[in-house]
Length: 175
Image 1 (cartoon, one colour):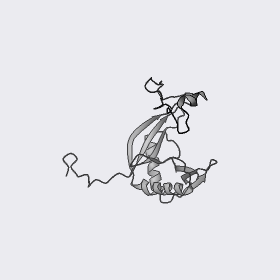
Image 2 (cartoon, rainbow, N blue to C red):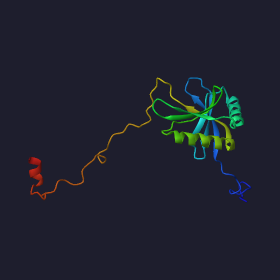
Image 3 (tube, rainbow, N blue to C red):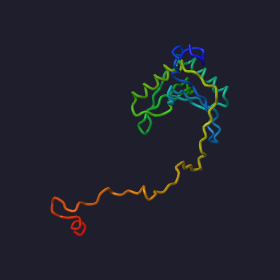
C-alpha cells in the first residue's frame, strides 16, 4: 500500500489509451471532435465529423463503442499513394485514421490496433481547445537571429606550408 493513494502502483492497471475531446478554434464552426490517443499520446484515430458540444461528442464515442463489433474497416488508396482507414455505418463515417500510411499493411495494422484498444480506453471529460490560425494569416514561430562573431564558421587550420607534391601554400594560392 502506498501512503498517498491508498493502493500500490502495481495494483492499478496501466492505461493503454484514452479518448480525448477537443475543439478547433479555426473559425469554421466545426465544433467538438474526439480522438483516440495511445499511452504515449500518439494520435491513432479520430471522429469522422464534428459535434455541436461535448455531450453530443460523448454520445458519439458511446455509439462507436457499442457498434465496434459490427463495424469493418475500409481502406482507401489516395491519389498520392497513401493509405487511410475508415469505420462507417452505412454512409456515416464514425471513425477514421488520423494520418496516412505508406503501406496498406501498416494501415491494416493501425485499424486493428484501434479496434482492439478502443473498448478498453478511458474517456477524458475535459475539453482541450486547439487554436488553429485562420486561412489568410501567416504564423512564423521562429525567432529571428543573426550570427555573432564567435558563431561564424572558421576553418580550423590553413593550408600546409608544403605538400607532398612540392607545392607550398603560397604556390597553391598563386597558381
